[in-house]
Picture 1 (cartoon, one colour):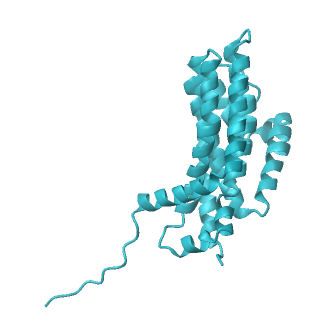
Picture 2: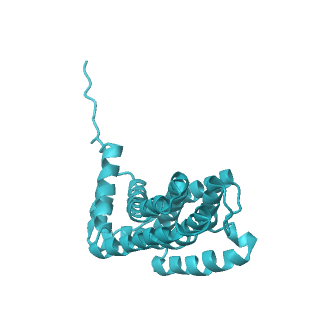
Picture 3: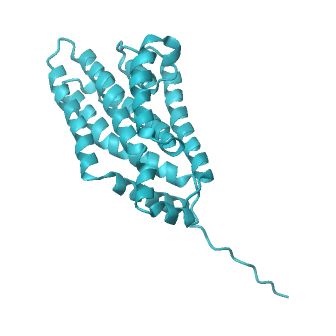
Length: 248
């Protein structure tokens, strides 16, 4: 007796489909306006690096530049701009329904959005900040800046991709969070600063570079853990919302 086994339709390979989704989201994010805007902020960071090299203490000045401009302003604003629109662009182009109907694990699109956003910001904001450390004559800060910026970028990407899926007008809510909370309440309250992504990014840089930075006094390991938790937690929250979304 022979039995014929029913072979289910194979699902696409996980890494292959994730790469495809990543490429789709990345291409949609790379509009001329966004490229010019993000690259301009990266260029400003590079220019400021030239100026910090003339300071009496270039190491501290450069670390202050990366913390005050990069981690506090340029990185979160650019991540917010890209991350909150990553799924919205797919809706506008009618691709989200197509992707929803494909046999693709629901966690992959949020993951692709996080990775694509991080790719753009790390390339056009973090990389110029690393180059700025070299221009400023402080190459010993290059690796420290790269690590701190990478962790902060991933944390903000996870947070704002989730916001883009959970909230209406997520861009404006994100701006309010950055202006009111991170650059207002968190600076005035030690307890509130525990809910500030930027505080942990600045602390990572301060501990690695062994410099004193405003709002950068937290221990290294808890700061790294906090940034990783925000990045992964944001991705999980985005995945949960995407699974329950009604796509029409």
